[in-house]
Image 1 (cartoon, rainbow, N blue to C red):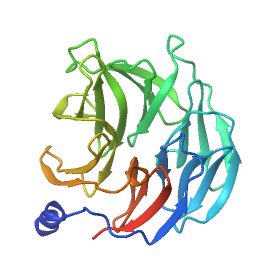
Image 2: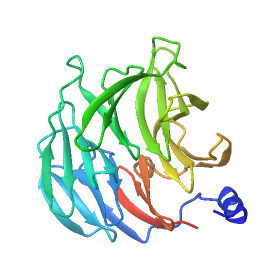
Image 3: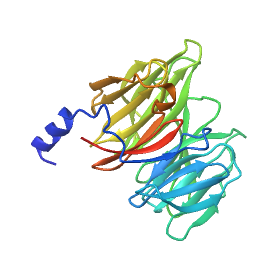
Length: 271
C-alpha cells in the first residue's frame, strides 16, 4: 500500500454515512450480530437465519430455534461460524449446509461471543470473565489454550464483545462496578495490549480501512473513527431518533458499509 493511499485513508471523513442506497426493515430486534463474506450477509430474523445477497435480497432462510446467536466469518474453512450459549456451528453458504461442531463447554460456562483471525477462533463466555478461549480452525475446530487479559486488574472488569482483524483483537471491556467501558486493541498472537481508551456505553465495534476501527456508543449516541494506533480521527454525534441509532456495522468491501439499527439494515457507500 502506498504512503499517499495510507494518508488518504487516515484523512477520510466517514461520518455522517451517506444516505442508504438499500434498506430493509428488521423484524427481529433481539439480535444485533451481523457477518458477511464477499457474496453474502447473514443475520438472525426470528424464526430464521437469513442469508442476503449484497443487494439485501433474501437468498436463503434457515430455520433457527436458538434465542442468542453471535455470527462471524472465517476465511480459513470458508464458512460462517455461529455461536450460541451451548453450541458452535458452521454454515457453508455454497452448499447451504449447517453443521454443529463437537465442542465441549468450558467448566459448564455458556458461550457469549466469537471472532476469527486467519488461523484461530476466539470465544468468550457469558460470565464477563477476563479469559478468551482459542480454537484451531483446521483441520477441525479444536481447543488450543486460554488467554488471560492480564492488563485487566479489577475483578469487576470483563470482556463484553470483541472483533478480530489483521492479527489484532479489538475488545470492549466493561467494568460493572464503576459502570464504565473501554475500547482496547490487543495482539491476537501475544495478547499484549497495544492501547486502550475509556468510553461510555459502547455496544459494538467494527474494523475498517486497513487496521482502523469504528466504535458505536449509545448513551449519548455517537460514532468514533479510530486510527490503528488509537487516535480519534473523527467523532460524530447522532441526533436522530433512537430507533435510528447504529447498533452494529460491518464493512462489506472497500466502497460499502452495512449498518444495523433497531429498525433497519442499511447499505451505504463510503465517501
